[in-house]
Length: 229
Image (cartoon, rainbow, N blue to C red):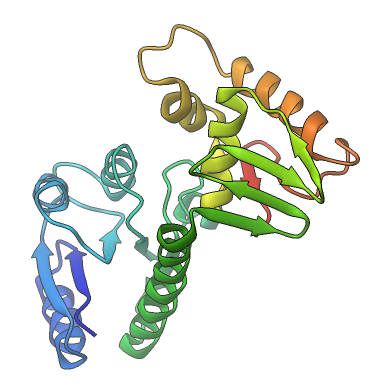
């Protein structure tokens, strides 16, 4: 397979077991035992996926995930004890892609890894090959920054297009309003999250037949927005 995986957990026996099993499937595995080491490795290397424990010394898994998301969309699976808030574990505010509760079956871990890498790999490959995102009647040309629905071209502002492109490139992933503000407008932008709400409303008015019952850009109440994949 040739996939490169970062495993982050302060329980060395768990890390050893995961590493051994993944290497049997010809994956290359790096290991970290605290949050700071995980951040350093993630910044210095390119991984196909990261397995990230929630409870870590020096910097917890949520903070590690949040900081990685500032510069990378590498898939992240959170490892957690049972009984945690599943919405939080899914990292809707932090950008995680999936979660697995301990104790886990290593076969389940490998199955999740393979499914996520294949899914994200295909979407990346499709984007690299065509620069085109197609959802129903909507076509988003990332190269020319044009959007068509049916035979009609939709005139979007630069920020409206940036929002749509970001959401559409990660279907099903929920972005908080704060994340969208930071990614699309930048950390130095002096405005607040209401800016995001206004632009999402205007975007829906342009691309949705019925903005109050959207087909493309959905609201996750109390969390943020996502694109229906």
